[in-house]
Length: 220
Image (tube, rainbow, N blue to C red; front, side, top):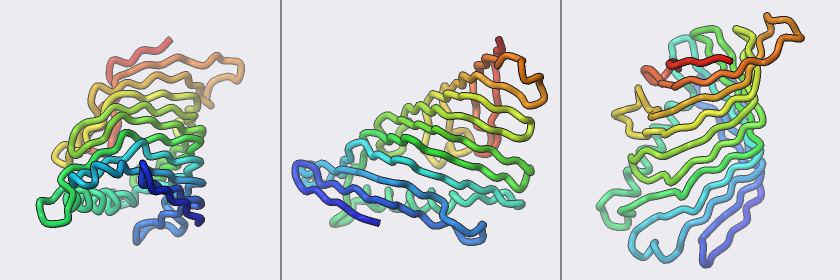
């Protein structure tokens, strides 16, 4: 797609029509499409071998996530490459950066679909908005996710807000969520059409890197 570049005081770019291909062995079509991606790097810290991004913004993104029958995901290889590149940037060798940080990530107007062939489940998110705090190295960072949810099985739909902290440390990949809660207003297809939506709140834990566990569940 089209690419715009700026130089000072921020070295930045804005890409239009971003497309990220899917991992090998998964259904055809891209893993990610986005209308625009913009990122800016502070110029002066570069002379101190520091790579400091301003907020990275992604607009009108469409994300397709898959879990195959063996439990392998189409995002595993992407995370592995990202971690390897981060380690290279923060290496001590000549020409490498000694520090890497992002002021935050902002996603607006997004949509996402998760198809889990292993558990025969499918989940769709729309009107997705994601905001994070500062991301630096292996440090945990705050995030807030808001979206509309459509979960055909068991027939749930509604508006959801998830907030807490994410720990990107690979050693804690099996339990990456910290102090995370979900607040939702949901309805169910198996209830009468005139039934009011239920308010729900709970603490959220990501178990073994795959399953979400709700605790301290409250419904009103």
